[in-house]
Amino acid sequence: MRALLIAASLLAVSISSAHAGNIALQQTQNGWLNDSEVQQTSNFSGNNKFDTLQNGDFNYAGAVQRANGGENIVVNTQNGAVNSAFANQSSIFGFNGVQTKQTGLFNQSVTEQTSTRNSNEAFVTQSGERNWARTNQSGSASGLNGSDTTQSGFGNVSSTNQFGEGGRNISLTTQAGAFNQSNTDQISVGGSNQSSTTQNGVGNVSSVWQSAN
Image 1: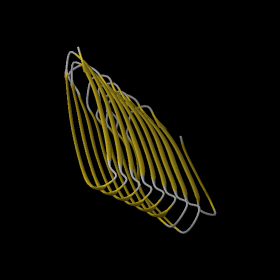
Image 2: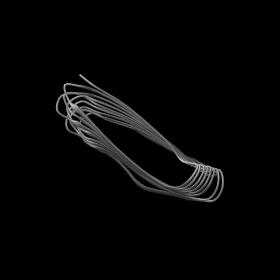
Image 3: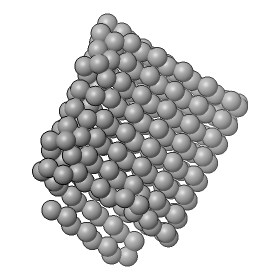
Image 4: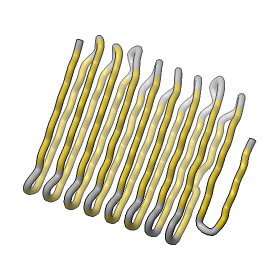
């Protein structure tokens, strides 16, 4: 089932597939008050992919993906002010991947990933002022939770939370500017934790909490 609604600058896509994959590529919006949302569900080995580009202010891009044997991929690019990007991915045997790029003021990025038998990877790049990024990852078996956040500007906040069973948690945070804050929490059961934080500027704060059993 595919439902597509375009009204003013509103775009909502809802896709459900039992066998084949779902692809919503290059959703492009220019202007103010842009809204791009997608819900994708794929069974068996089908892949879910969502790619959106927004230019303007007060943009929102949201993706919810569910896969069994296939991959979930989200690419969000936003240019302007007061941007918000959201990605929620869940896969049993497949890979979860998110790439978010934001330029402007008051950017927000939220990434939530859960994989039972594979890996989660999130790449977030923000440039501007008052940027905020949160990445939550949960994995099991021998998979990898990988988070890479890069922020440049003023008043940036990065929060990374990783939970793994038998796999590896890897968090990389790079911040350049003033009054940056980085928080990393990692829990591993039967696996390992690795965290790297680089901050350049004044008034920076870094917090890392790790637990491995």
